[in-house]
Picture 1 (tube, helix red, strand yellow):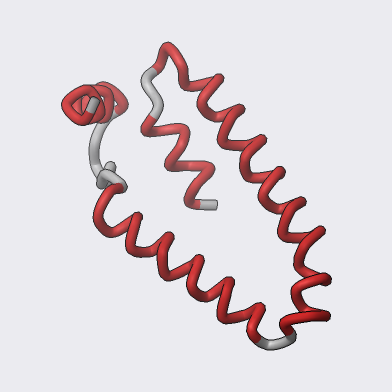
Picture 2 (cartoon, helix red, strand yellow):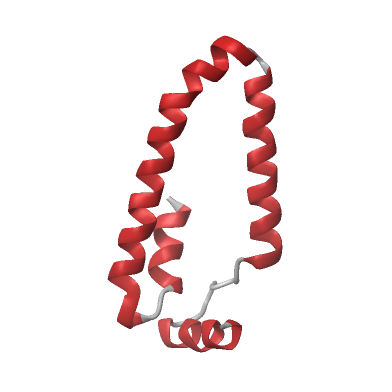
Length: 87
């Protein structure tokens, strides 16, 4: 749920719909890849599969801690200004 809300807040108004569409397609594509590759990995790597997914989650957490902007309490206009400074 958080990515759906966050992507609606971080994209500038002029590209918000397109950005949300790209995020949605990316989400479903990645879910399909995991659903397709997951059984193969479980069969051949067994429990090591969970280590792979845990490492991916740890990397995503590190990325979020250092690169994702905080948007709590900010208006959409303030987020646009904050993102303009990052570009």
